[in-house]
Amino acid sequence: MRQLESLRSLLLGGVSELKKAPEKLQVWADGGSIVFKNQMKLPSHRNSYTANILVTDFSGELESILFPLMAFCKKYCSEGEETEIKYEAEIIDRSRSDVLFEIELADYVSTDVDSSGNVVIEPMCEPPYGTRDYYFVSGNKKVAMWNL
Image 1 (spheres, rainbow, N blue to C red):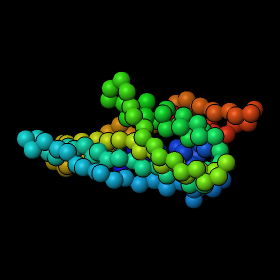
Image 2 (tube, one colour):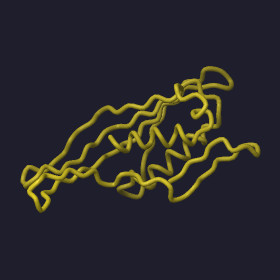
Image 3 (cartoon, helix red, strand yellow):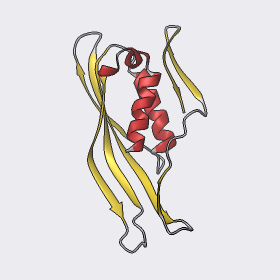
């Protein structure tokens, strides 16, 4: 679940409110499945799951979470023209809410045999952060910054 770990790190490092209070972010996977082809010599596989990102007691701009999620999905989740991010929200009061985002993710793992006969297991498509900086500004204040 490398993408799930990477997504968590991205949000904790980039969203100001979560950086100050990381306990507001909960991340977990459900509905997971491992898919592999029986006819292959070695069991390379795809680990698919629903990533659940729960932000509790959030008082910041919702877009400060949404834009990093969309940028992440555009770069790492897109297998077609569209990617769907589902959400549910509970309004606590005029300034705070709990928001649950759901994103379908998949981690790919390949296996091979090296020249010594050892089985080599290698995660594929691990997010290489650090290629571009993004900022979300609200009222002349940077409320989120992330690097993809």
